[in-house]
Every structure is written in structure tokens, then in C-alpha cells.
Figure 1 (tube, rainbow, N blue to C red):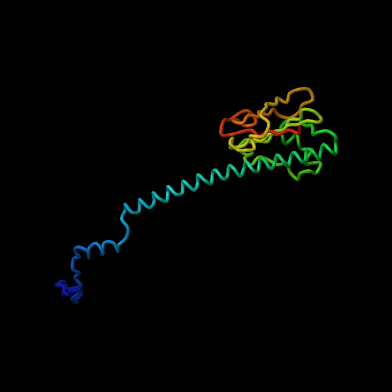
Figure 2 (spheres, one colour):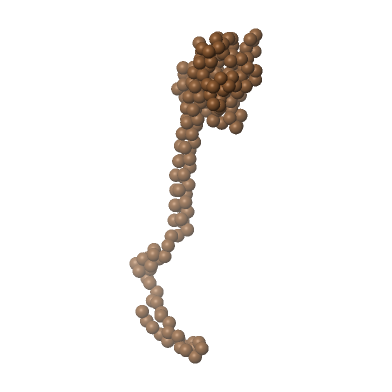
Length: 196
């Protein structure tokens, strides 16, 4: 380091400045690398983080869909068990007008459920469906989000209008590429079961 006297006087004092020599070659590159990241380096890192986060979020979305479908299948199985217990006690399946909730309200009042299971996406218009064909026969439906679900390979694929004499509940479209109410399209599928 070279020291020199300044010719400027401030307040009657002479200041002493330290002059730095200009680095060159390897010394300049080393001095430059110690100062921080360049804008390009920061942009590359941000882009890599963005790509990785989008991959993670996409896989989380798939896991959530599969989780909701597993819950729907478990709910339908629970409702089937409750319907069988109700039938054992009353010799008929529940009769009710309207949708799933009103038609099966008697399962709650009889103590088989504290609250009737609901579709995980009930707030977005999805509902389980129930159709009582006769005193001894019913159909249940749940709209799955993934029509490649293996449960759809072993279930019923018929359409039930639920408008005949003595029939109560809702129509069920048992197709593997639509919601149970007949709307929507793939990748949705209707999981439909019966007591037969």
C-alpha cells in the first residue's frame, strides 16, 4: 500500500489517503469473484428453483387427487355397511326424496353415522349419489377424479334413471369418463356400486 498526503486541507488538518494499486490479470479475476454474484448467475439460480418447484407442485397435485379418490372409495364402503345395518334393522333400505344427504338422513338419525360422509370437494359441487330402486335394492355413486383408478375396473357401468315406481333418490350415470351426474369428462369417472 502506498500512502500519500492529500493536498486538500479540511478544517486545518491534512488528510492521509491510502491509494490502492489497480489489480490486473489473475488478481483482478480473484478480486472480482469475491465481490458477489452477477445478475446472470442469480437469474439462472431463480430459473432452476422455479423449474424444481413446478415439478414438486405437479406431483403434489396428483397425490392429492389420489388421496381424495381413496377417501371417496372408503366413504362409499362405509355407507354400504350402514345401509346393510339399516336394512337388517328395518327390512327395507332408506326412502327419501331429493339428493344423497336428504335420502340418507335416516342413517344419521338412526345412529349409524354422526354425520353423513361427504365428497372431499363438496364445496365445488361434487356429491355422492344414492338411488333406492326397491325396498331391497339400491345404487351408490361417487365421482372420482382419476378415471384410470383400478376401482373403476370392477364396478358397475350402467345408467340408473331412478324415476320408476317406488324409486327414490338421484339418477346415476355410471360411465368411466364422466361424473356421476352425467356432466364433466375425462379424467373423471363414476364409481357405482349396488347391494346386488
